[in-house]
Length: 158
Image 1 (tube, rainbow, N blue to C red):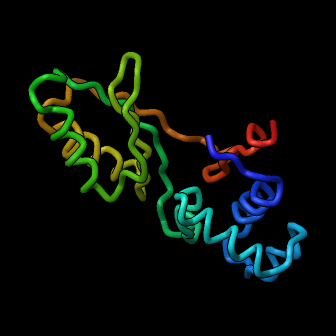
Image 2 (cartoon, rainbow, N blue to C red):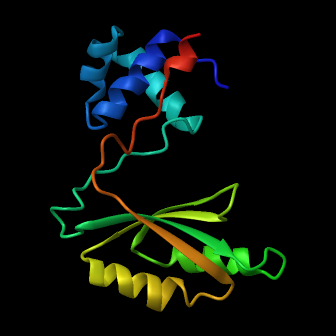
């Protein structure tokens, strides 16, 4: 775990809320002058703690009205199926995130599509036809209560 001081923790917290804040404003917000703030910012980037910055897009405003989590179980783990599945998922634009999991299923996918018909086409004609896929369990998101994006920082203050 990295050893961060209170200024760096505050900096990370502020940047999670507003990644476009100029360093001069960031410095004022966390109680440092601009030059030391800029040095700390660059050090956090260099250490890989700050990975980058991206715009947060509204899926609904872009016409992606259906959001689902899909659990996938493979037939086997010893025939190259996991690697083949991962390669295929990385090429699927509908899949915004993919995780390997413990438990009854091997993978958890976060998927966004325009309609239920598009979801049906994605699951039945693309996902289920991938080599090695045994079964698929789909859960429709009714409402996003919190997230994505926030990384907890309270453990760094202990």
